[in-house]
Image (cartoon, rainbow over all chains, first blue to last red; front, side):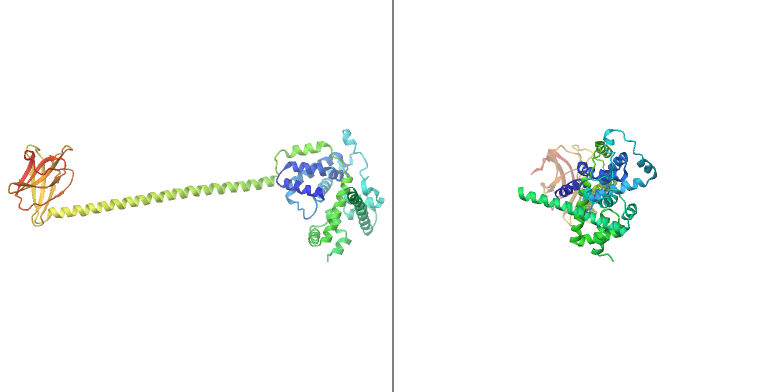
Length: 187
Length: 251
């Protein structure tokens, strides 16, 4: 949790209106948040605007963040998700999201990937587990919307999520154990 | 009824993390998290896993986003609500400071006024005392020269001081002599008027006369047959300078 200690310092400075702290948090979390926003709205240009909006909101609302209620990333994720879902509810932007052919430069075209494709531990899960996680976390669907999307009963969907989370826990836990072992052996 | 088991079974921790709960449900979960260490630990593990998954699936945004953000926020720009809160606080502080300063000035002015008034009162009191003393003195003098036994005598100036005069009031019963010397001409600083009583041809000193005084009380001389005024060196003389006799009157 060393990086969370660092977060505490950044947030402390941010509440004192230190803009550099905001850019340090941006450097750390913008990739993770952009991954979420882009998968949710599936529009590069819009995602960039929404990422910017997310950090402006973080800057404005940092006083409302309470670290006893959760990590900074969880709080920032919720902001990004709400901003993105709100923008997708606006009809004019919905039309834009369907138009994926307007990428201009190479950097932007490089993300013309399948947004549903995931990396890391989640990719090792069974396809139905992967899909369940992707729908609620990366697409921003509620459990209710997601089980309909998957076409399975709600109870089944809930157990998919629970199993997927347990497998992720196991996967990350194993990695952690290996790291701890390596530290003990070589440290 | 919500309990820990239900929270876990219903997947409320995930839903809370994903911001899917109503405000009421969120508050409930937050209360449980605050009081149940085990539940809190599970939630933290869930947060860590989700965060880790997000990092594994991170997509680097173009650098232009950060520069746009920096441009948009500008240097030192604060959210309006914090700025206004600061402005309100600053304004209140300034108003407080100014009113304190104004009060201080008023207080100093009031103290100054009070001091002036006190000084004026003391001054008036002193003047009143002087006036009262003067009145008593004048009244006494008036009574002395208006007494039924008092004899007023006029001493006319001779050729040494023509058209000059002094008035003497003599009360033989009270053995009192008072002289009004204001009719005498002014003398140089090294000279003075001196009055003498003539007793059997011998001039006896009665005292000095200053023409700027209203009424001078002099020594009464028994059996004096006349009153005489001479001009003498300042401070007076033991014996009269006869050639300087400028006025006299006989009883």
